[in-house]
Length: 257
Image (tube, rainbow, N blue to C red; front, side, top):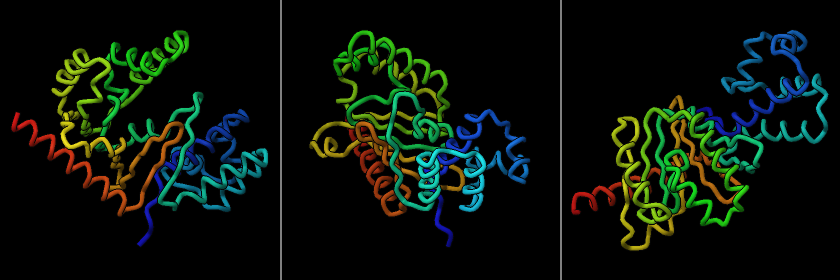
């Protein structure tokens, strides 16, 4: 059986190939002609629909005459296509692969024990988070407007379930809870509140399980400036089971309230 490709690694590779081409001001058709491939083939490589072979990557990078460091980085991405784990280092000037997964996903399950997901945050909540983190006022204004822009650009997955702990609402409970109750009317989005009773939930770090086309599952784990993406089937199943257990507890709490 063929091992499933790492969706995040494929996204990183495809976007890097496109950036390498556009950085040299080459049109897709012109580069395809130079490489002796169909323009649609090159487009498939750059959109992640189909990865190139190692020989095709080497030929493309050789033609573009990339720096040794950039060439090595892209080759490493290719070699990670079959790896069950992919680590992304976040930077202010790049779009996270997690946002691209949000756009590609047909379904997602998210556990948010500490902070309401950015796409669901109210204005009051976002500003409260920035104050809590002691972000300098000028930086806070910039970050706030960047968050607003990301929310406008973000496409929600077809079906999304978000499980929040009560603690996550703390920075602005009234406005945020009202917004959640309003948003929950959307049939594509299901939001539930989990009680903080035994303290077990506090030890489960935030995670999101994404399902993309072809029933491919990826778990995203965010740690400070890194996001760890996991495609290993046994680990994915563990996270899906964990989410189900937390969801059942939330349902039981709601029924008994």
